[in-house]
Image (cartoon, rainbow, N blue to C red):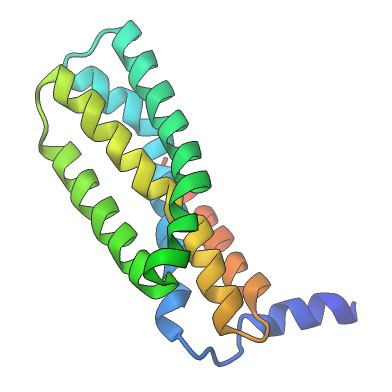
Amino acid sequence: MENADNRLSDTKKTYKEPGLLVIYPAYYAFLGVVTPYFPLWLQDRGLDATLIAQTTALVMIATMLGQLLLPSAALQVGLRRLAIMAAGAALASTSALALTQLESTILGVAAISGLFCGAMLPIADALVLTGQESGWGGMRACGSRSGSFQAPLQ
């Protein structure tokens, strides 16, 4: 029982970077909305079942590559700068995807969006772990809670 109380109290700690607290809920809420509705959005854009499958598979591959490759750039540019650059690129590419109409463009922009969106979670984890003495579990719990809040909307 004491461990459960300690885990809950982690979410109430004062963080050195309070802005980091929004990363996890935003990431998981975005993921919770995009995952079930992205194929429907692609269908609305006129893609057939084969192109929808190819696009979603490409996004998953790009996400995995983003998680593996982009965080290593922190050694060259610094973790904070990388986080800002990746978040900006994720926002720009996802916004561009919303405006894209051509099938061929959707495939490329979706892959770029997946690459940068996928990199956000390990970069956020690294920021939290380097900037905090503790509290990582509490911040991840905030992300999990966001999934439960947006689930009824689906």
